[in-house]
Image (cartoon, rainbow, N blue to C red):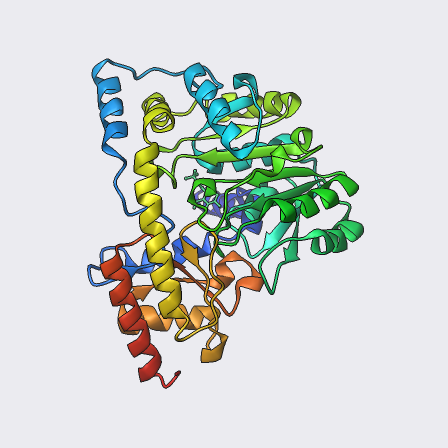
Length: 396
Ligand code: PLP
């Protein structure tokens, strides 16, 4: 009897996981960072997380909310006032929207998942830039889609030719774009977006536009692709509070989409998430209404750090100057190490953590992602350690 039970349980274990889950890999970022948890000597340029606390006025609003006992569910869509504030705020990036086509989500992470699950039918192809943020490919697979990676080298940007080349052979349904981009920091000017929009219209695509770093654009003003002629009805735009307002742990973002897609996403959201946490939504409302000065303060610091860090890194590597976000993606091929070897050795020998570029796709190989969302002192120390690492290994 016991033997039968043993056999049965090993049999079940083989079959009990979904094939789709088995197909995806754990995040290359997390895998690396599990190695350093608890180590005090590390300078981490690894995680994409602001080093600033949530601005005090936002925290205060959330404390009051708790005091007043605001701990219930909200509407599935999210608080009306917050959606109204988002609609008003997004005009800044050229997009007209109504509270009814906005859903407040538990971060942009959920918005990406909703957009993909609401639009993909089994086997639909989804164009994804390579390299790009780690969740696009696995979430496409989980939604039943077929991820098609578009190599973006040498400038890490999409353009009409690159999209056409892959659209012609794969008949895709969706294009994902993210700008300013994680991991490269590139962004697009209006003219470049118009060229991308030409391809979108020609190949009849839907666009998932992840604009989470929109506020952290340093080189020019951010424009949403949804603001361009003919694009409004094709775009699912998402943004959130994690990066611009340093609210990562509060898990709040939003998605703006055409009415049919909003309704479809809402069905999934209401069953899987119900609503975003009410206290975080109240904090987000305060962020949009009153925290522009905090945002500008943090942005100015990121910009100074970017300028300093890029200049220093250029003593050792080829480095594209990032237009936005808080990442720089140096080309480390002159060291003849793979990106994983480089990141591992730098961590072991000098206690500086960076993310190997291949965590973001094959085209990220030969690069490392460094986040400059750390203090200037830490950046200076990181540069000293990188220099001494390269010298000790006779790499420079
Ligand atoms: N999209 C991009 C491009 C990101 O870099 C991140 C986080 O690093 C996210 C989405 C997830 O953001 P959220 O905290 O809003 O879920």
